[in-house]
Image (cartoon, rainbow over all chains, first blue to last red; front, side, top):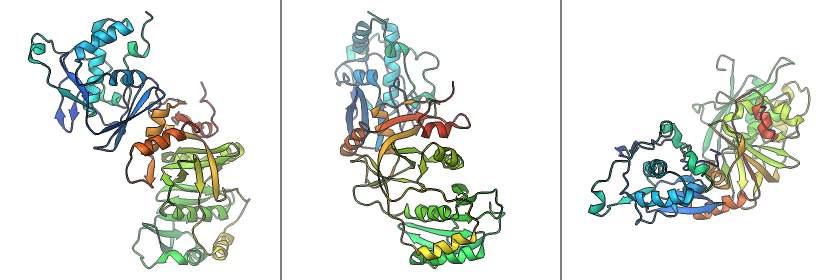
Amino acid sequence: MADDHEHIHEDHGHGHAHAHVHGAELEPVDGSFVPQPAAGLVGLELDGELLLLDQRTDRLHVLDALGTVIWNVFDGDVTVDELTGDLADAFGAPAETVRTDLGGLVDALRAADLLEGTEPPAHQLVGTEPADPPPSGTTDPSDMDGLWRPDYLVNPPAP
Amino acid sequence: MDHLVWVDSCTVDVGNVRAGIRTNSVPVAAALARALRLHVVDDPAAPRNFSVQFSRVADDAHLLFWGGCVAARSFDPDRILRALVDHLGAHREPPPGLVWVNALAYVAPAGAVLMPSRFSDDLRIVDRQLRAGGYVAVDSPRSLIDLASAELVVPDPLDVDDSALAEAAAVAGRRRAEPTVPPGRYPLDRWVFLDTAGRWATVSRATATRSAILEILEGIDRPDRELMEVVAELFTRVGARSMFPGYTMAMVDAVLDRPPPQ
């Protein structure tokens, strides 16, 4: 609950980050996914963290500082692959690591029903490989109590 | 506790709650019914939610049970009966602008502390240690909070017949008087939340705001931006901590704001 490193914190610890939304199986996103905040969310940024109220369900979620930075660029236009490049440059981290962790965050947010995805242009789908699963230990459903925390995002390497 | 011999006292109707009361003493049952007569209803089938157990053994504390949980433990029968009245009063509608939150309150000169109510049993057992540390329990299962002013509000007690209540208390042996928190407003100093991951830490304002809103039981229709802003503002003045009761005296350390042993 009280973890400055958490990315997303759901109210009932119910989530299966990569499993279900409203009972439907969710596939991990690929790089062409265009994340967009779901409708009906009210956000309040507090000391760099984002408190999100889902008015559809009255559920409250917390994104930590890095999750908030990433959330704020989910504009319904940029793809996961494009964001991967941006973040890899910004943090000086290997693109593959960033891609894996970002995919995990996006999956977690989708599982919490906080993200919608838009259809990417058809040409972006060609040759896009399915995302690798996040590293072992980061997709445990119990981790949805806010504990998904890729280390490189928490402690980005020095430039 | 159902193996004990209980005597039905009365059924009361307070707010939206109908509660049956029983005791382990015939004269106490009768005196309690008189004390609470303004709220008594004729409903013998109501569940016996509250049980007042006055000890007949000098070394055993008197107990107030709420269901199967210890709601108050004391060697002072007055306190047990006041706790009963305060538990019943906690089911009244909150006054406008105030909310009932799912937390147990302790008051010290530095201000009030809110603790996770799921550890009621553990907290009541360490009542003496907490008093020794300067913290007096508010004997209520929930706490009335003015979110805007960041204050704990201890409401005026339910309207009861004090003389009849004193008669009930006189039946039991009294070893010592124990303090209670008088009605009034007390600035909140800290709000302590359970961390199921076991961490004892400062809680960020966003997480504290979320956690606090989830503890609101009555006084709001549904969460909205205004509520989020009010609670977030509260945590600019009130410390937020997390704890987990992983050892015997964890509750004492959490209330007294001491770090857990390494």
